[in-house]
Figure 1 (cartoon, rainbow, N blue to C red):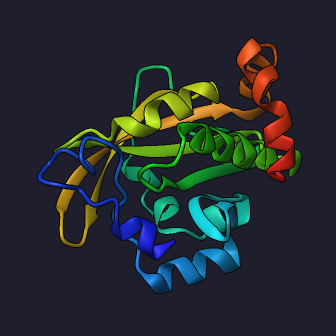
Figure 2: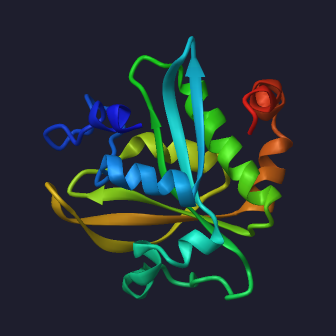
Length: 196
């Protein structure tokens, strides 16, 4: 996971050669995430090609992100969900360069499906917006029915102050809408084989 992250740097303000990038995660942090989060991998011939990391409700509520939630600038009409509705947080999604984008979609869907199966109502994710926008994750979040609901200032070692856009999906609504599409019907067998 750390090797994939290192291969996806914020490259001169353009992302990883025009693709996505990951910020702020050390080997130690990945080890901690494996213990507390839901981690899905996609592999082929013994090589890990990508991963998804999602914090379930209990891990989210003890995370740095949760501690900073008062800093979120919500869009008009948007707000934090009721306390009694379990929420999850899409911490990371990464795909090694050269791997089919379908694998990224399968990881995103598998992670969301797992959170929904565990009773989570909401899924949040942040996407770097300033100083450079991480466009790679937008279509994947869109496939889950997520939409921008606010923004939050963050700080990453080696990068400094950034602004991230906060996205939100109601899991059952997003997955139900997606399940009715022809695209999902085509990829469902692969998703099930991937253990999502």
